[in-house]
Amino acid sequence: MSQSFDVIIIGEGVAGLTAAGLLAKKGFRTASFEQQLFGGLILNINELDPAPAGGEAGGAAFASEMTGANADAGVTSLPEEVTALSPADGGYTVATATGSYHARQVIVASGAKLKALGVPGEAEFEGRGVSKCADCDGPMFQNETVAVIGGGDSALQEAQVLTHYCGKVLLIHRGNAFRAQPHFIDQVKNNPKIEVRFGSTVEAVLGGQMVEKIRVNTGSGSEEIAVAGIFAYIGLEPNAAFVPEAVQRDATGRLITGDTLETALPGLWAVGAVRSGCGGSLEDAMQDAKHAAEAVAARLQ
Ligand code: NAP
Image (tube, rainbow, N blue to C red; front, side):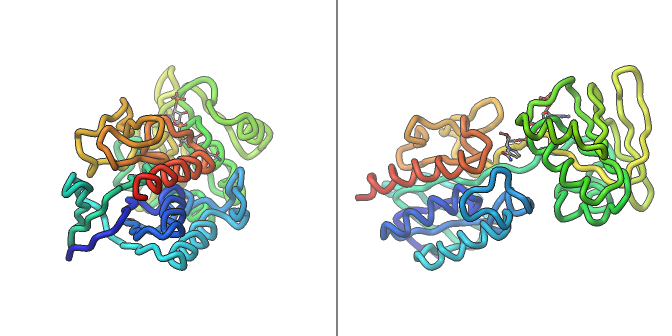
């Protein structure tokens, strides 16, 4: 199958949904692609902090609302993984497993995924105590002890979420200070259910049928700690494997753009978590999308 659009947006997280909606409302033939569920990383967050206007009911409701509005505006939403992107006929060809699509302008809004710890047992116990979603899986750990790994906004926010269900949350951080926003640090300090372990790293996840314990390097040796669940929030890695190598990446693999958010390839733009230099908040991702959508609209006139 081959279809042609004015603009294609790759990714239906908040950045992609914002850009697609704006461009469709301006009358451009707009398609957006998503390999999983619309909403990206916020889909798993019940309480957005800070909540954008319309986001008070949580991430899934917010993304669902945007997706509905995009359909009404005429966005063609394609539930497919983009496997390749290449310059063609003054624009770009976007390839998926089932077809190829052409657009004059392409916005990469493919976001990022949670990084894995990469320790023994982590992959083996996925879904059996190893989780990536505090809001979805927290209720399975009523009154149990779980471990959260990391020292940024995600780890501190999700540790707080888990205290709604768990008896105790061990917050294990390799450093000696958090790099999260001050209000998350205050919440953690004042939550009696959270026990912080600084200067510690997880070496292995252990268990039988389910996770039973983790082996932690405390800096002065290894210690086995009984936990029923483990949630690693140690940062994000960008989803950019399909983007041509001619687009430069920073040291973390994020795409480098100029001030207008266009990459070195004319007509190819990057917004949100996949873009080098985008701040980590929802507001930052939406601002990126608005900025690029305006520039793309001007280019398409
Ligand atoms: P992050 O800010 O990159 O923090 C990752 C944390 O994991 C750091 O504390 C880091 O330690 C630690 N870490 C990294 N690799 C590790 C490893 N291999 N083993 C153990 N620890 C490791 O990631 P994030 O918290 O997911 O946040 C990502 C972005 O989203 C940020 O811009 C953040 O501000 C934003 N965010 C915002 C909100 C909000 O506004 N509500 C919520 C969540 C996320 P070091 O500190 O030692 O490097």
